[in-house]
Image 1: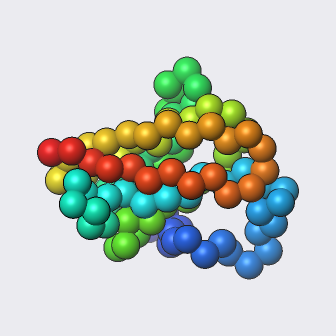
Image 2: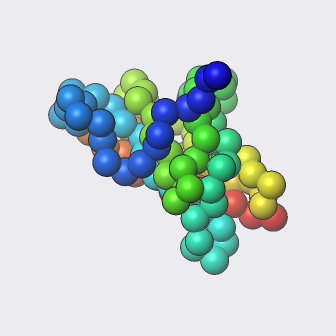
Amino acid sequence: MCAAPVQGQNLPVGVDAEKETILTGRVLAGDGQPVAGAYVRLLDGTGEFTAEVVASPTGDFRFFAAPGAWTVRALSSAGNGQAAVQAEGAGIHAVDVTIAA
């Protein structure tokens, strides 16, 4: 059985945030509550699908990416949303996605 790795704000042991470009955040409802189980997609600067993870029970997600312009899109039964993020280089780049019904 395949499954997405457990997501969260804490980085796995051995990940060097000074060498990796990491996009991380939470999927949130309009009232600020986390949305668990949302499909979170990473789209490149041209809008092409690059990767997908499932948000954790606390709405957390994480992608390892290259520097550049990205769109993070969340799809859930409660609604959908997206947010843009510009990752200038290595480090943690935070972006929350608020969904709308």
